[in-house]
Length: 239
Image (cartoon, rainbow, N blue to C red; front, side, top):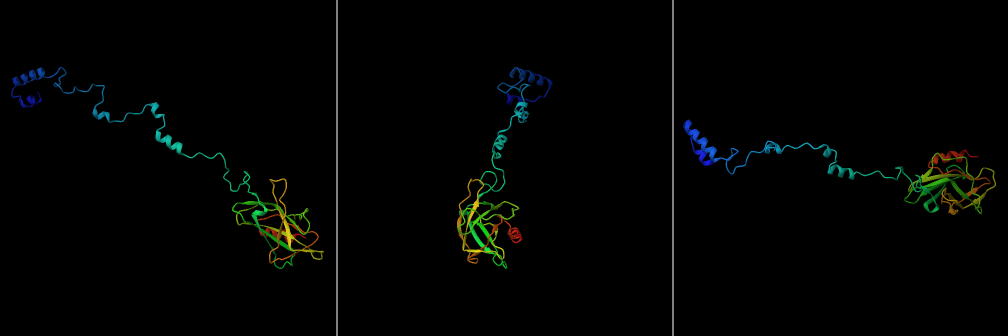
């Protein structure tokens, strides 16, 4: 019928009326051609309207998207342990106590001192920090029960030393006019607060530039200190 409709010409009103009658007879009841799709119902969206995005329902907008859930789950959670502070070995932020196998011990005199005072230098020979508590327990000769008493020289900070780092202690050996004895080595032990007994003393040879020490009746030792200058203050003040 499409070909017949396009070939006719409306030359007069009668012809137009005849054409209208033929069109009404040939087309379907809805005014459409046979076999053609009927117009979309008024309640159905047209093709152009169907591409418009529909607004999400309130229930949908409340749900997190899959990507948001994935990114949230990928975020690292804070650790339940760890304080973030350096050091540690006993779980309280403190390094373990130094023991004899951790340390290299060196000895030296102060210049222009006439050998009355000895400097002990402890170097951490391991790859982990350790702490030298209180003062070194020093013994000379056959004495193994009563170490040298400390001077009044508490350190300003705990003597925790990392790998290759050093701590110092000074020894007052004798005063002028005292009766003295000479030694080529000494015993040393270290305090361990986590143990009921301190470590056993080991024998340490004096350095080549010291060779021997002269010890009087009342020798004493400073606390361990990270600052050599602080040790010197107490060593040369003690009389």
